[in-house]
Image (cartoon, rainbow, N blue to C red; front, side, top):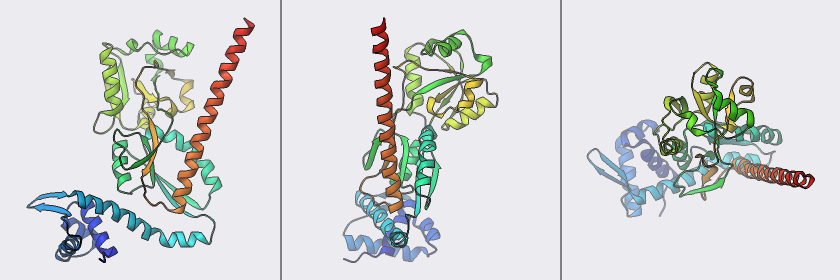
Length: 328
């Protein structure tokens, strides 16, 4: 059996475009030959790849399997020129990383050092909602992603990252006594203080996720905040607060710029308050270019160094506490 690369490319494009007519336009070929190539592919493999009945269209399980293999094979072929060139030069190439705004602080820490060590590798970062990011990752639109861990991670190789813990950003005009007390003493905010308060909160495009968890948590405590603004972008919420939005900002602590500490109160939340588990993820068994493999490995090492550093910090803090008790 000899399945050509052209047929794999045609099939991949048909699946991604959802219609043969749209795929034909993308590929700059006429529709009848494209339909013929699809039929030939099904006859060669002895399976139905796409169920077609009028306007109904469904990729079969066999079609999904071929699509994933086509992505892998076409990735390999596409990277051949760059890999051959890179083998005789310093490390070069491009890595594409997808990230949710809730995890950008990790990339802010990682990328400058990575770029200094590998100046020949160009890095592209595309910011997406976590749900979209997972779908595009499975379509090989990115080399790997930094995102909130999906409930279903089948087909992905996942490395846990530090949890995304939220805090409340309080504008000066809304800084009532409960918020001032929590910020002043570094104590968790009494969540009942959020009742009937205007809240700007992170929310994915289709809802659910963190937003649902927070609403369920507050409802269970009899708390009903006024949701005045939602966005899938933590940066958007931060910018709006700085521009004068009169609301309590529900933002991950890691994504709040230091400049805000001068004029806003930052209030932590109780340990049982919902948080998100972030992760680095790539498609399992997918071939990655040399540049992307280096970036992935470097990120794993960077995360491990951060994890070990936090362990040492906790150990030192515990030792200091013990010495303080001995003195007493």
